[in-house]
Image 1 (cartoon, one colour):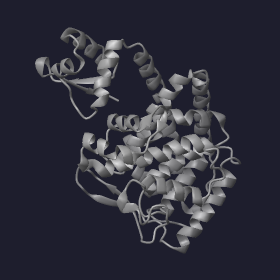
Image 2 (cartoon, one colour; image 1 turned 135 degrees about the vertical axis):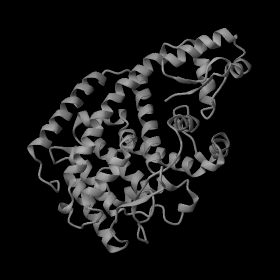
Image 3 (cartoon, one colour; image 1 turned 30 degrees about the vertical axis):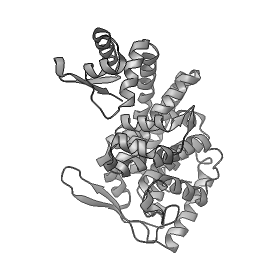
Image 4 (cartoon, helix red, strand yellow; image 1 turned 90 degrees about the horizontal axis):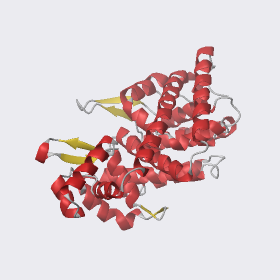
Length: 375
């Protein structure tokens, strides 16, 4: 059972979400494989980009997509170490930490999407392994990745306009209390995720109790949001588990970042409790129901983008590829003339089509016009 009593108002909202999930499932169940893969990739990129930016990384979704493409060859993931220097040179070395966070988050989500059935029942060992993968490209984390914290830590929200830091939550202290809380959480989750009627509420409680423990020295926020996705995938609700890989939940959390941190604080009054019934988990449940509902609309956006993509001419695809090779740049027509050897008028026609279909964004007018990828 979950740690709070379900009221009629929340139950009504859950039924409304279920109806939306069923409707969306009926729309996508006959998708062709290529279109489904495209949507899944768009959702992955959005989730990775958003989850890392919530924790103050700086890569845009366009840059995350380029990193993902660079690390994927013939449908398989290649080693980051072999591509690291190339990626750092392209996106600038001063963003190395952000790139390492993106690559680690991407690896964790790829594991969760592809192996969610194999890693149930969920164990502390699996979670420690996911944490190890999350931070394995960040050299300074070598001494603590995959291990529970040995020093006190906090959940902190930073106002980027003022620089003000606010403590959102004081987690469990390191040591026996953290270890006991994690063991209890695993036992509760494995018993509840497929026994309780509403898996979304189980996922919400699991996410918050993990964050309230904050078991690792670093990376708890990113891992907690990934575990929320894992919970949805591991549920026996076929509509929820089928649609989860196609939606970018973290993108909608990022858009509501201030609200997200405010609710995390209100749920616990900023404190860790051994008794989960002391948390006001209904607040977080309303937030996540809203986020999941909003994210369902992304599928239509991705489908429309895919339809536009497959309709592009060979010339437009060639020009679009020039932008994908340089995601960090705003490119002028004359640069495209040099790299493609195409006539200026042909390039301008393709740029107009790519802009109208939402693949590029234009800045400036006339000869000073520049174009950049748009995600």
